[in-house]
Amino acid sequence: MGLTAFLHQHLPRVWLQRGPVALALWPVSVLYGALVGLRRWAYAKGIFKTQRVPALVIVVGNVVAGGAGKTPVTIALAKHLMAQGFKIGVISRGHGRKTRDIRAVAPNSDPMDVGDEPLLIHQATGAPVWVGRARADAAMGLLQAHPGVQILLCDDGLQHWALARDIEICVMDERGVGNGWLLPAGPLREAWPRQVDAVLQTGPVSSNWPTDTYHAPRQLADHALAADGRRITLQSLSNENSPLHAVAGLARPEAFFEMLRQSGLRLASTTPLPDHHPYQNWPKQPGLTWLCTEKDAAKLWLHEPGALAIPLVVTPEPGFWTTLDARIGQLLKR
Image 1 (cartoon, rainbow, N blue to C red):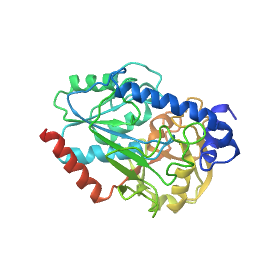
Image 2: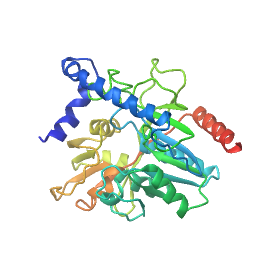
Image 3: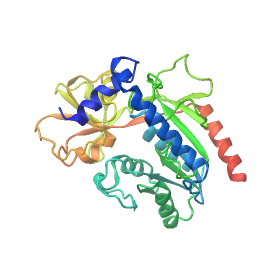
């Protein structure tokens, strides 16, 4: 097992409690916290510049390392705002891509050039999506190409203070803030709690949530997608006699596998891979039925055209949409 895979598999367990390994890493987290605080102070004092773009900016992010459902939330936001009649665009850094430039995402883009999550967002919504290491530059590129865009969604970037934002949405799951310590002793990217406009909880309902938290349950769709666009119901897959094999290149692949099992699918094997895994050296195994996430599909289909992708969706409670729509209305009136 490589170092990356080892850390990917074991650190999330360390972060759940303040055990011996977390305690050993705590001095490093103090230094990390000091650097994060200094950086944010520099932006607040204008030493580092924050750029404002000519559109309303909504940042969807989290304060813990690892996936909590940011991309499905971004997709849900895009669809909601487009249904309200807004012209929207999406910007992202494009984690995992090989390129370093600023570019638009096309429906047939190579995920290794634009990132798997930006490609999924564009394919799921049809909205213009641009990627760039500096999100403000990506935003300006998108707005120059699409001058009618009113609202920009920033997929991830809660800690990217170089881009001014109007609304911040923090996504959390059942892990919460783990042991409450900063990286690498804990999962926190920055100190929590801090002020945001809304917290979306994608995990199970808990009495420990803050009162200003909205529930956005994360669940699998009732169907899988084939490479040719066909839909296969999960019910039909659960009735098949042939064994099913699942693979996921996610921050928490085991969470995806457990959702598959809870949907009634019998898994003969599971293959957890690091987040944004490229699948370039995927060993073809003819005759096996592979299940994956939509995020993995574009890369896996190049090697396993028979693989089936199962969409992951979030459904925020109505109160969240009411609060968001009111906030957007207030900001646009200004």
